[in-house]
Amino acid sequence: MKNTGIQLTNDCELAISVQRDTGGLIISGILVGNTLYQNQYLILKAQKGEIKEFPTLGCGIMQVNKLTIGESGMSLEADYK
Image (cartoon, rainbow, N blue to C red; front, top):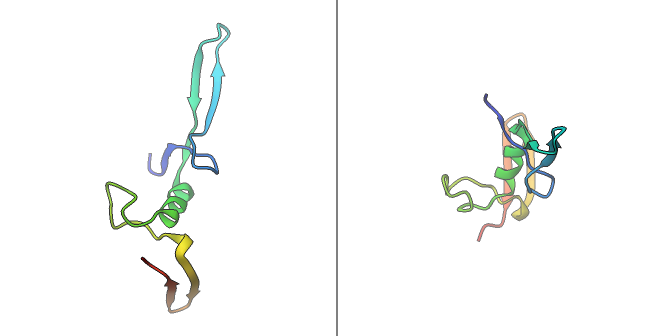
């Protein structure tokens, strides 16, 4: 399903919730769900070159000085190294 995948915590670690059956065996653990907002966050946070499969993908939001969104579009001021 589109936008469905492994969930991450706020610290970008695997979201794990271990569930056991009556015999104590693990029947589930890694959480799966909607990843749309999670993926958007990761793209904004990533620097260019950090995502191996798509080396030009990434905004590096830590370097953004000013972001303006208006009727005519979006304007971004940032310091890129």
